[in-house]
Length: 171
Image (cartoon, rainbow, N blue to C red):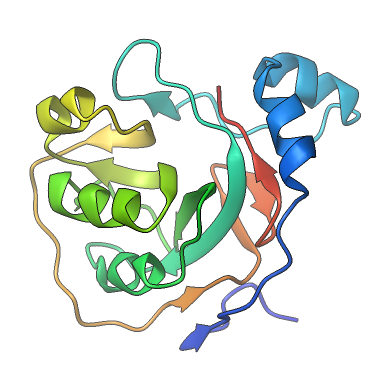
C-alpha cells in the first residue's frame, strides 16, 4: 500500500476507544512515548501556537499538497466528536493552511484540535477560541484549493506514522 494514495476519502474509520483516549489525555506525551516503546514521537519543530495548548483525541488524517488546503475542507465533513485533524503534506510547506474559519468548522463538527506539518494563520483568533493547534509554522500566506489529496489514509507527518483512528496527543 502506498502512503500517497490520492483522491481517497474514507468515510468510516475505526476510532480508538473513548475511555482509552480519556485515560491517555491525562498523561504527558513523554510518558505515552516511552510506554509505547519510544516510538511515534513527532519532530520537535512541531509546536503549539499558544502556551498551554493541549489536545488528545482520535486522529482523522489528511494528506495535502504544498500551498493547497482543499483537503482540510473535505476532512471537516468527516469529523466526529473527539477527533483531532492530523494533516501531512506531500512536500514541505509552511503556508497558512488553516485559520479561524476552518477551525470554527472543525469545532462545529466535533473536532478538538489540529496537528499540521505546515503553517497556520489567525493565531490571535485561534488562541481566543481556544482551538489547540500544533504546527510547523505560523504564516499569513494563503493557499489555493486545486489539488486532490486524501482523507483517512495512513500519513507520515513530522516523522511520525499515523493511522486513521489512532490516539494522537502532541502535548
